[in-house]
Length: 363
Length: 277
Image (cartoon, rainbow over all chains, first blue to last red; front, side, top):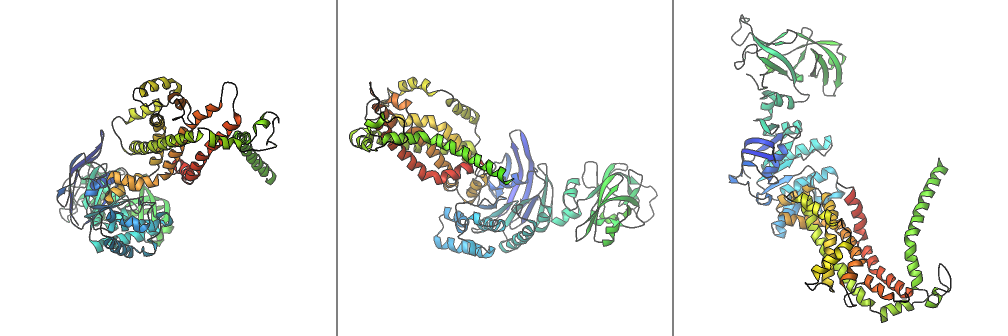
């Protein structure tokens, strides 16, 4: 097990920069999830840690040792690929033991390591099969098994569950979490699925356009997103955004210094918010609120028309237009199924997020 | 709908049958002439099968001509060429498929250019090059020339097979602790067996039936290959068809055996290389 330090790491393909200076310190035993849309550089970063891509500049250290110029085989890491990358001409047992055989481990040791890993993953009856005779879930398990037979310094996962169906994905997600609790191995997990990120991570690294947007625990990212990108990316259905201007009313309502600020929307409605110290009055801002935090109430201050009602079983998603812009509500209230052509909504103040002109969070 | 479909299927099968008959008929004729006694060759008119058959031509070719030597030479040249080319093409095809290097574009272009010239043009220069090296009239010289001509195409063939194997596999092997070369040998090569078989087969048959260079570079019977040997049946005044055809039938045997041996991989390979990503 080991810590991993990433220091101002950059990557360009020819003249095209892909990663613009990433800094990240991963503690021993930590489960880190790199999350972001396709092309954000998360897989590239993972592959650089694995040694499959060269580092253009900056430094990567595993257990304090610089590994920039080490071949993958000398970094002592294990990786689970999206395609599983099982060796088609080898049995499951041979697939799992390949790394140990390359290291000329004693036969008895290999047998016990493979046996232990197989038992842990429920692969015992499949050891003699070839990968093509396995189901998707079983292949995924073998790929995991191949990673855990030797005790590497770190586990790297490159979207390992994205080829599985939803049910299996849920199951494997839980198994990966259990496995991590069991092995306490430093793990870096790349995914574009934010549910996987939220459920698995000790810390999430949200990336966009080759830049780290925010690093924090899953709930930190959910509760206090650092910018518009993170706010929109984490959470499903995604956060609603409304453009407006930050206003401070001179008189206030006498309840304290934090009162008396608001966001004036395009129709003139002022949504009261807690006073922000880092924005100027009359600055253009974006107001954000998660669909699950919007309250439907007859006395609500804003009126929206209902475009679409989507029952998900667990709850209901209402697609609305507010000032002509799409707006979503998630509610557990079954009454919303019969919502009229118009509903009135309220924005509870504590759930409001304000972002400045550059898209950064304003507090 | 049924009769229409039946008709179509019938026409389809019929067309294939006609094509197969057309392709195989010369082989049949080869066999027919090889077992026709000399006195019946011209006296019976055109017949599908002679009224009397004989193996005397085969007997003569095997026991009283230089053909066993020609066969041996052909086997050595074709086998060696096939092996040399396949090894070279595996390595170069892998490099073209996996690495990006500076002159890649120009190397590919150069290899394509070598395929553009009619071989006849190259006979004289090659003779001129090989002769001071003592490589004319030698099997080694032939192997070198055949290998040089077959490597470019075989490289492209092998490259397409390597392209069909996901890169993840080597990467997984490298993370498991293999060097790139070990990953190539232990993971990628076994998966390319169909491609290797296809390349072996292609090069073997090309070398087996090559006449031009064999004729130009080899003089005398000691180092002649079988296509050159066939010409010994053509004399100033007559062609000994019976013996020539018997030798031809015998020449088919190694090629047939070879394909029988590799066909399992070949069929797999042709589809795997073409479709599978």
